[in-house]
Length: 118
Image 1: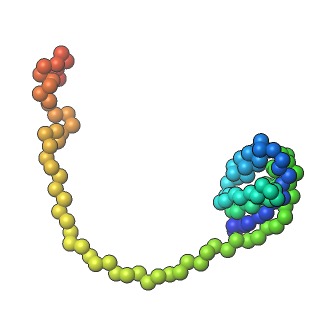
Image 2 (image 1 turned 30 degrees about the horizontal axis):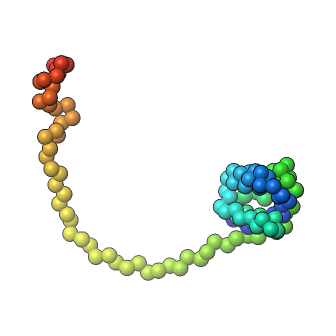
Image 3 (image 1 turned 90 degrees about the horizontal axis):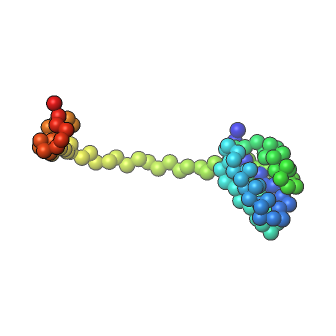
């Protein structure tokens, strides 16, 4: 399925209904972006979704009509020639030797504690 840009006409008169509409549309898998014009009541949904199912769900909340559906073409990527990167000489990484290189090493504080190791 290709990405589609669908425009829906909604009759949203309350903020509560507007929030429900946003929540309902955003729960669909494949929705890339959602935009809504509050003055005209048009909602634009972009993504790989089944638009009639969205309209069916929205009709349970408010009056919804499908205005247009367009196929969105992905932006063309310009291929740039790869530049060869200069190779760096290998670096030597040395880890410092600490006092506790072994995780179960005997520590001097055990000598003064009540529970001493075996």
